[in-house]
Length: 64
Image (tube, rainbow, N blue to C red; front, side):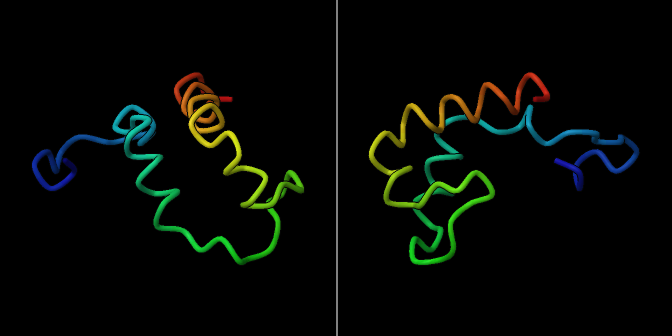
């Protein structure tokens, strides 16, 4: 989008993301790394991944 509109400034990419994109990103990440800043492991996050990603999406959209 930035290439198509070089004169525009993009402040947040959140508006370009959706839950499907977050799910695809989750699927592509390594799951054997360190825990996240919240102390949660990938295994624990995966138990309820769709709801976790929905919550993440809502936080992105609201700027939280």
